[in-house]
Amino acid sequence: QVRLVESGGGLVQPGGSLRLSCAASGSIFGMNVMGWYRQTPGNQRELVAIISSNGNTNYADSVKGRFTISRDNAKNTVYLQMDSLKPDDTAIYYCNERTWPTGVDFWGQGTQVTVSS
Image 1 (tube, rainbow, N blue to C red):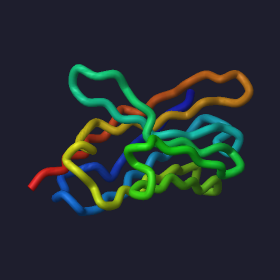
Image 2: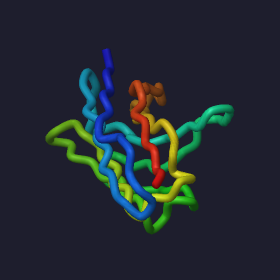
Image 3: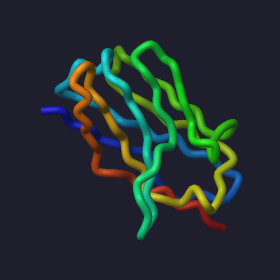
Image 4: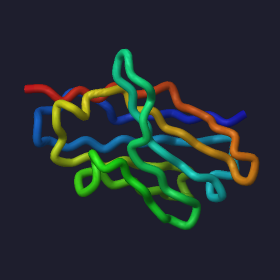
């Protein structure tokens, strides 16, 4: 049973930083693509950043240059460093694990990020 547990969300002022963590268990973590998505009320969940098993990354245009995704395969953990946060970054952030080669998606419970003065 794959389990993803996010942490690190909270309230931050515009221009501030947060670091999200997602600890995975029950999977062959090192082989899978990991990602962060976010969702606001009334909107679809959107991709924020993904990182492949070999460390290749891809970002939404809205976060390029401000967010950094990374992974520690020894700790089965993926991170999202968020800098220069804006009010538009306010959302629930979800960790995603996509298994290889089956392509099955697993999701965490989500963590709230609020950017407000």
